[in-house]
Structure formats: structure tokens, C-alpha cells
Length: 290
Image (cartoon, rainbow, N blue to C red; front, top):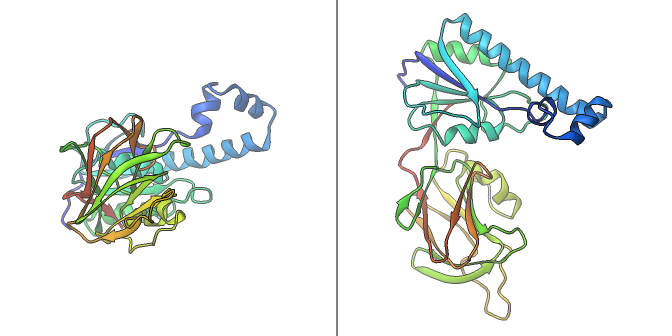
């Protein structure tokens, strides 16, 4: 692809050590740190590796005289005027940044590969200098990662899901009640909620719940009902499945307290009784540097 990279935005996570021990926000962890407890030491060691990665990436960008700005994943501004977005952290940082990205390529750098899964990150600190040179010389590739578009009562939400959407009761112990509509099939159900996943997200929560792993860059959508409760009724017909591109899944919420959890806790959209939810492929896939 032909990209002219002139302005870069760097998004990095704040480590647990930074958020809760350095600031003193978590007295118990702070006390454990003072006592040199193994748990607190592990958090410090992870923070040190992460901070070192950020420092070295900044040095690398400055060495190429590249204009860049940076912020934490909790304070991302509009990114429209930047040519490349780089995340430093793990999958959570990548996911949060992706909710602010439209057409720019996104590069994920796993800052702590020994402890972070980083399934969405295509580079580590060791690989970053080579990857950056390739990007600046326009010798890099991107792949389109499918995103889910979500509409509530016909209105499109700002957030698009890279991994998955969980539609459920806001209480972990509460029953999820809803109408589910897939194709020409419709059913009233009670369960622990429904996962709706992209192919990239098919290796995460939905797989742990019994779903199927899909090719990473597939455009298929997968859905799975968690712990369906039929009682004395006949077994549900709509329990899990894989939808081809162009198909959608719909819900009518029948709960007083319900929400859509988009990419885990990256975005939470509360729902009202009777709200109609439609989920399908987004026409704006994410361009991921590979």
C-alpha cells in the first residue's frame, strides 16, 4: 500500500504499578511494595520493562526526526490528522486505540511479551526498529481486520468491535432475556448472554465458551449463546453459528438492566427494555500493519 507517513501518534498503556502504587491509589499494593512482597515486585518488574519499551520507541522515532505525539490509552484525542497509530502495551491498549481509528494503519507493539499475550500486536521492541524503517520507506504491508458495526434502535454506535460484543444482563448472576433473530429464525431465550465475535476475536472468550477458531482475517461473524436455560421448553434452535459476510444478528432486549460490552471493558453501552440491537460487519475494517 502507498502510505506517506509524516505524523505519528503513540498510544501507551499505564502499568498497574503506575496507576495504583506510584500514585498511592491502592494502599494495600503500596504497602506490599514497601515490604518487597513478590507480587508487588512482579508488578514493578513488568512496569520497568514496559517503561523501557516506551523510552526506546520514543528514541527511535526521534532518531528518524519523525513528528509524533503520545498519550495514555485513557486519554486518546481525535486521530484524524495522523498517518500512523502505534500502540505500546498489549491487546487491551490495541483495542482501545482501534476504537478511535478510522482509516489509518495501526501498529501494535507488545511491550511485555513475557507476560502479555499480545495476539493483536505484530511487533516487540526488538523488532520495532526494522518495522519502523520499513514503514518509513513505504515497504510494509497491512491486512484488513474485520470490525463489527453495532446499531441500537437504528442508530450506529461510535465504537466498533475488533474482538467481540457481549450482550447480557449487567449483573453477572442475572438472567439475560431477549429475542434473538438470525436470518429467518427468531426465538425468545433466557441465558447468561450472547457472544458475537469477529474472526480475530474467535480465539478469545467465545472460544473458551465452546466456539470455533476462525482464520484471523476472515470476514465471518460467529455467535454463541452462553449457558442457555430452556427449563421445561424444547431445546433452543439458535444456540451458535457462523454467519457469512453480509449477514446480521439481531436482538430485542427484554431486561431492565442490560448492556453491550464491546471488546471486553473497552466500551460499555447500556440498554433499555425493548431496545433493538443489530450487529453486522462494518464497512470500515481496520488496517493493521503486519
